[in-house]
Length: 178
Image 1 (cartoon, one colour):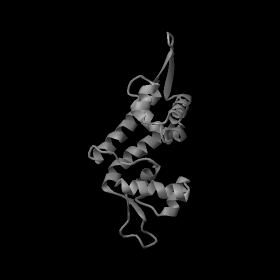
Image 2 (cartoon, rainbow, N blue to C red):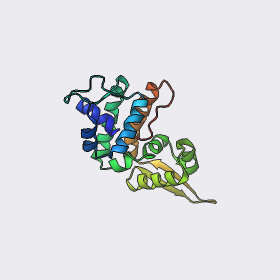
Image 3 (spheres, rainbow, N blue to C red):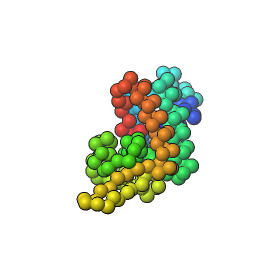
Image 4 (spheres, rainbow, N blue to C red):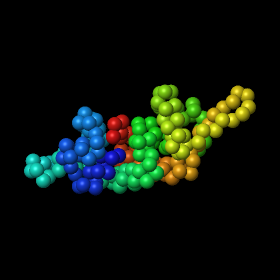
């Protein structure tokens, strides 16, 4: 998301300035750019070669998704939760929590390992995006639901997911790294 938002804002970028602006290692940026190119959201600029021309630019699909990415980033920065939101499993968990759900239901919907889901839920609860409810009874059970702050962010994440789904023609766009 930060790469798409930055490329939209700058109208494209060369590799090193992009890495410096986003504070990414060269390897992480390379992997993410490769995934974004494979997904059809970013492309190498066919006119690259002159120092003032960007090396990477958004495709038409990337230009449709980038404003949504920018809104999610703006909202997460405004609430000082960017570090949590940009972790791998945070947005899938937010997207899956359209209603109150048990841990097992979330795990099935998200597909994360138990450890990854537990860590994501703990961080989302700590940031006030998700509420953990312990129900008394036998056996006791735990459910998770979005807080008002989490519902606002979920709406934006759902728009992003819908946009990616539409661009992929109902298939999946690879979004593992970026």
